[in-house]
Image (cartoon, rainbow, N blue to C red; front, top):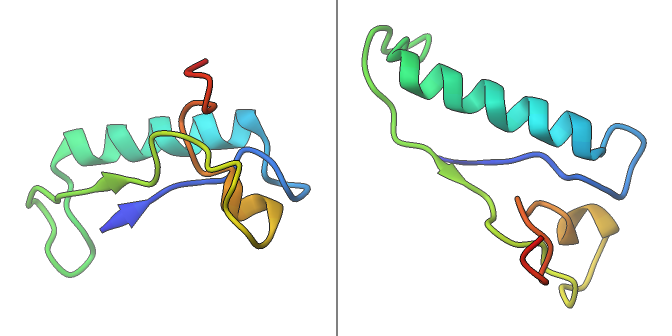
Length: 73
């Protein structure tokens, strides 16, 4: 599963919300709570994406799923 939250582009797409989402995702994965269908099992999760994609076409939110800016900040 890939998962993420945009940091810009819409009202709820903020750096603070993206940080909260990713922190909660990491806590859930590390807890081994599993999923509703498979409770108590570990899950594999991929964070989408490491860097924002400034050159990607489409909505602004689609360019802002990265944990970091392209300049590595």
